[in-house]
Image (cartoon, rainbow, N blue to C red; front, side, top):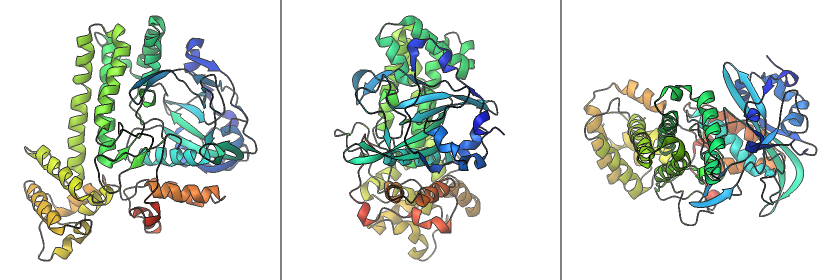
Length: 492
């Protein structure tokens, strides 16, 4: 296994022309200390967990100590923010150190919060402890849920003051991904009529990550279809677990179909399809119910960027409609059906799923607990309503719950699946633990006081979200009263 000093750094992205990025080192972070690290993420780059305890570790991943072979840079891109063209953006506080290949996969290593770049747009280039912990925990939690995502190796903190709404302290989160290329990376060159650079970027993505597209009649059409399918499946997974991204700008959309850029995200507590997890989103553009539509809109922005490579406008539309729409719809029905304990898809299932979400919208039970507790029930109603208490107790209107349970049991009867088999299958897809805002906030408050043990406890718990963990059962609870007013914004 490699050590910190022998990590096999390369940087394929740096071999693109210099117009795609600016080479520059991270800004040193004074007196860095390790807040948290993920052994699972470390294993992705072949790094033994013992390396995480070395005193050099926070120096390396604060950006203070560059390892041999690393070639730090900040990438340029553009994008639409809240539906409005924002022009040139770029890595305003992120430095790509390079890439490490392990087990046949290349992982780009990016430091977020490592100082100013030419794309900082008057910002300070720093991240704060609060947002860094949130991204670290959610990246690793989403991976454990089986949702495509960037990963997070560690959070390194410093007592250096950073001003946001209040004065906070600085931190750097180390992110891993095969690539951080975004929809906005293509919009950047299309908006400038830079045909050569646009084609070069598309060829880089195809040849490096999607070589099967090269065999298609039009590789760029095939690339758009691939992105459409992966994006549809990704957002279906978000919806199924109650995850809200909060800021689905085109510069925050991964060309590889990963969950990218954790800012004002949230997991659904009491269900409300109109819930807005980002208090900066005054019009609800990125509400839970809007996410599928926004994914569609963003793909059209990407399609317009690729239009000159694909050809006819009708071909762009066809590529999106024939990839994203069926991928989202089919994957969503499949995901929710599995969560409900259905082994196969039958006629009428879409209507039943619609009735289920109508029930959730009318009565607002806790989203995560609704599906998890449902898995405790038997397929045949027992004499006493007490047997259904795990689900009924989530409702003020117990009769509404009973009426829906009758429909659910009738649907289960169409399969005749043994209870033990069905319950095990439901527990394998319905998490008991998700990163609720109150859980992240508790860990952040402890860390701001110098106690990082709660961050580690949350990380450890969420690494096994489907497994009952008595020692972490407090993380399965709905929000306590003190958390009722918690809000996150684009500065989170």
